[in-house]
Length: 267
Image 1: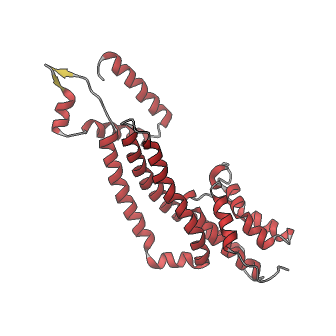
Image 2: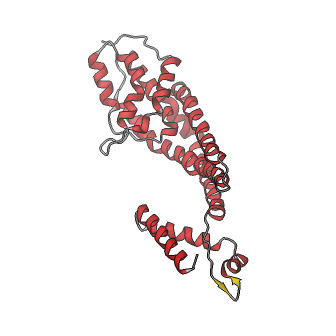
Image 3: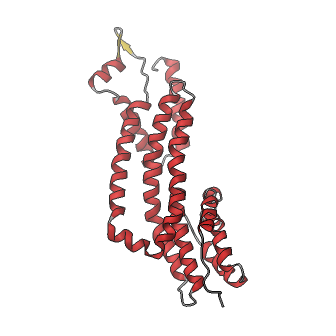
């Protein structure tokens, strides 16, 4: 029988936060990131089930199932799971199947939100600003990228590990009632497309060296539509990716085409 009145503290949640930094450091094709997930939750599981090998074994089995959520906001789902485990440890009638059911139900939507914001928006903005400095030879370029990307990343993880625990099992119903998920999707998509469009114009260069009667073909094209060649190059690469051409092949093709073009005077 489980001992009642077991409570998760802020200290336990902080341990989950620090462990979550290594959440996606272990990967396998069968169950994805399950090892990092169980490792992150271990402080909570030990607190709740450390005096019962049987209950500890059951908890580990629950959290070694298939798991894959974007690491940037994984602490939200980790702390929701922790709150449910706490409820289970204090209630013999708690349905443990609901713990994995909530995890499975939230992994997809939360990953979509996290990837849209951190990968699709924040990383692009940070990389654009960092690259713009780096291309000018400024050593602050990569440093700026790391700061702009990682400060919001770790701040979100730290805040969400406590917020998720406070929300507990009511999180899903609150999200559905508020309609905030749809608004976040739409806003992140619009901002991400704007940033990507700006990056195409500012960071992709097609340096044509062809001239006709001392008139640069590149300047003529840009006079008709600025950065048209950059847009066409981006669309070509996007088309190849849609046809499942491997990224390594595309990169090799760009390198070979660039070298040959330089040798024959196109670039």
